[in-house]
Length: 337
Image (cartoon, rainbow, N blue to C red; front, side, top):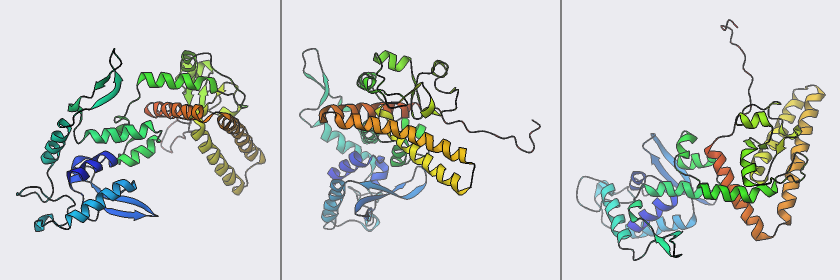
């Protein structure tokens, strides 16, 4: 039972009390994938659905097989993890979960970090940092390291605000610097032509991240990306400097521009509006094609290294949101202006 609890904490990132309150019908399938059904009591959102791996689902199924052989009190009949001792609780209590995890962690013969001391020997991991709720932070960090989009991670964590999600992961200065060093030689201009940056310092100091790439326009850099002179029409700007870390954002924008073009055509707008959207699509597509071609020509290990660096930089930008596209505002009828 405790092994299954540990697997759920580790693999799902649910809060300890959300795991202890799971019901025996918590496992479902959706289009061939396993789904965990759980209750977010903190936010009063019940019957939430979280896609889980097959290994996690198999662990639940294995425990359910064992559980069917147990004699449990009537009050515990619907809970996945019945109370381990006599009392009023219908399911396992949080203190028992924490104490059992602590006994197991303290009994491990060796627990090391990936850092080394001055002699090159791995440093021991601080076992006090392992407790049930810590697995929720580990879950978020693991997804962030894999480059999961911030809003997707927010949904996985079941947070209302992405600001809350950002408090669960971080990027080390060393990893960010290494990612910039790897990315700076793969910068292109708006035509898709190589425009490598001279150094990691120049990449960070002389450009600023905007929605679809880096910008080197001095006044916009000075304003932190919020004062674009041409309102983020990056594909037509000579200061536009995208790189592989922006590929998902550029490709999403191309899809949005195509949808806007179809809407414009349906509204029978002037031809210059459709032409402007088409020109932007073609220009952004040239950038994507150029970067994709460069990536395809790389050796597998070099491409994998660059993709990891791109994921790190996307995570950095997720923690410091990009400036939003400007939206015009109109005075209300009661506004004297």
